[in-house]
Amino acid sequence: MSQLKPSTGLSVSGAPGSASEMQAWNAQLMAQVQSLREDLARKDQIILQLNRITSEFFADCPDYTQRIPFVRPGEDPIIAVVRSVVSSLRKKISALEAANKEVSAALKAKDEFIAIVSHEIRTPLNGIIGMLNVLMDSEMTEEQAGHFQMVQDSASQLLTILNDVLDYSKLKSRKIRLEKRVFDPEQLVVKVLRTFAGAADEKKISLEYTVGENLPSQVEGDEMRIGQVLSNLVGNAIKFTEKGKVHINAMLLESKGDRSMLRFKISDTGMGIPLDRQQRMFEPFTQQDASISRRFGGTGLGLAISKSLVQQMGGEIWAESVVGEGTVFRFTVEIGEVEPPAKTGVVAALPQRGGSPFASLASYRGNGRRILLAEDNPVNQKVARLTLEKLGYHPIIAENGRQAVEIAAAEEFDIILMDLTMPELDGLEATKEIRKLNNGSAHARIIAMTGHVFDDDRERCLQAGMDDYISKPVDLADLQRALADEVALTS
View 1 (cartoon, helix red, strand yellow):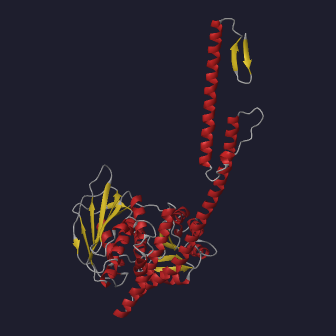
View 2 (cartoon, helix red, strand yellow):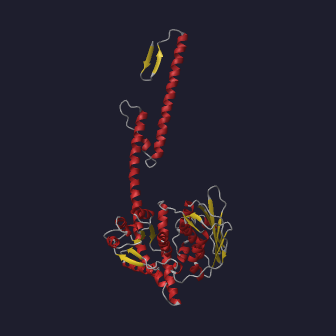
View 3 (cartoon, helix red, strand yellow):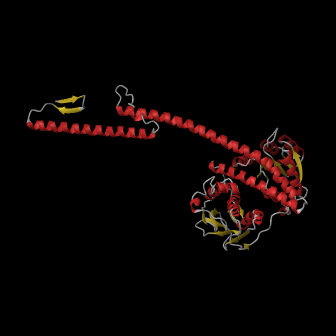
């Protein structure tokens, strides 16, 4: 006969009648006792593990593991622990989701604030820089030209600071998009050095560059971002060099498979960087010390931005420096397919600053062609009108989007320059309306000219039917490119 003991779960045969039966009965009992002991041990381990996990997860609630979960009648204690943990986890997850929504809302508000501030600063800055370009093309004494150049340099510094803050925000939000275009790397180096020719001349610093024998005449990559990194490094080199020279070397590294790497080296004979500072110099808002910021200015963002951009372009950036002797920065970037080598050269002295900013645009003349300019800001209207007239175009001004649509409907235009933020009808809606017209204006090349500079803004412009995009303050080289593209399309 068998007996079942509810309190223990043991099941054994009836009372033994002999010694052999006693031994068998005892062995059966011991086996079941051992099985029960092992089962309880496993359950204890599960409970301990659950308590450990719970304790780690709720580190901010140290008394949590001291609480005894409510056990429903007939419920396994382990199930009660699991139920308690799951309930607490759900509450914690719900709290985390709510906190995440708050963080997302705060980040969105920050991005919107930066976008608004950027636009509001760029709009008057466009008037300052644009009018300076016009004035620099006028007859003036050497002293007056020097004064205007100082104002222009100051405006450029302000724009650099604004761009640094904006780029850092974009990098933190992962909103920088790289663009691939074919460009000449040597001409990019020359362009960067010419930008700093005035600053170097003031300090009597020589600007030089060399290129490797294998440097191709054309590569495919993000010319603007590579130029931005070069500008950051050259600007720092000039800033921290009191005498001597700043030198750029550009060369093509060996290709590996379908990848080719460009390497740039920027060396100076400046003050150098102490070893303990070199470890942190690529961190944001970092300068050697507070006296550096007071003496030389700057946001401390340039190197951090450069590092992020270089990494996005598939490269690396590093530096070597000796205090009192100078610094050498090197960085690499990945490029597309390249053409065979075409040239080598050295430039010991680059052209001095000054002169008309329109001189390099002489070959891009509008020959009296009419352009519709949609712009509501009176200062920017005048700047754009004078700039376009100097380039040989005849601008017709619309003070808002609605007026732009009406003028485009009444007359035909090959080019329309369109601001985005305007009363009555914004630039995006005006573009959509113009594309619906039944005359030649419907096929005009519409170019956004705006202080909105996020990649999302560019996408919105293209989706609305625009063909190109220029950010404010308007760079004459960008305007030249956009107008040259139109000439190429219509010639």
